[in-house]
Length: 361
Image 1 (tube, rainbow, N blue to C red):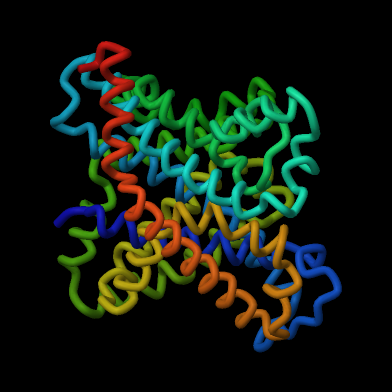
Image 2: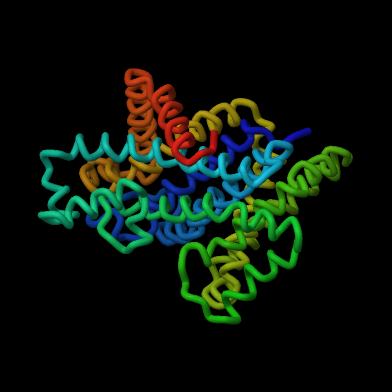
């Protein structure tokens, strides 16, 4: 039994669905004056759940730490191997981002948004380049799309991977404890890296010890009655996780801890009970394959250019589904453009060129 790439794609599919719900219904300011029916729930319940869905960030962070660790097993023998791996991972991330970035810039060329966001003159183009490199949030410069703040964190997670992988291999659980306790004890600035550091380290730790697989193997050995009881307990546990994380006192006091435990719990629950349903797994895997493009594109529809359209269907669930459909369709267009321009071949040539220049080949 393994936690495969297909499982990872399913988890990314879940993460993107949580992200869309989080962004759509975080508060009334998201839908402005649009009349929305939240049947069979209330507006307050939607907002409450949407706030919890912020764990979508943690899912992506944990999967990054997990995936990079698994990729390195039996592959990375030397520091040279690690440098080459980090470069390849970084370029894969950035080339995909830059392509979508440029497509959106071209599609927006007559809207005036470039000047509205970046301003005029030399600084406008400096801001443009920083944004294209995914570093706008890190340098606190203007960004064309607010959701792209995550790119700065994603870059840091890749660059810092060798450090934290080595620390966890050597010090194990002590690193996890430090990632939770040190920021609070030292009152470190509440940055993105600090907030999700425990989550990232937890992903590395789980991968090193293959914990998801070991727990599922243990579950599969149980009798049918015990499996049903386990399911009931984990559903109750999910409710407890949501309640604790969303509590103003306990949740905020141990926020660094919850930002790791909640995503890990959701992934474990999904791995044991959801992805075994093949039709559901097929849908989640499909969404997972498109999750990067969907993440980069959807805010341009939801909040920038087509806000009124996205929230125009009266029923909250329909608005949500429309955003998913529009984002998937846009992602499919991006993938078509990739085929037309032979993106994979061009990317490989760029990676080889950069590797040669850095003496990594």
